Image (tube, rainbow, N blue to C red; front, top):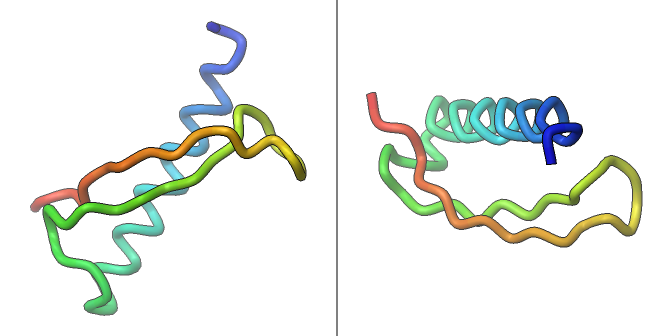
Length: 58
């Protein structure tokens, strides 16, 4: 739903930042798969999504 768009954008930015930091410290290489677990809204007990994404490539 459209009302969740800001939440999802924030989550996407946080995941990307985390992957960039992991690559910076040599823990992750570009193109490597990453499993991200998230919720549909903030707070405890809302985790309902598992995503398999790939680390960004330069």
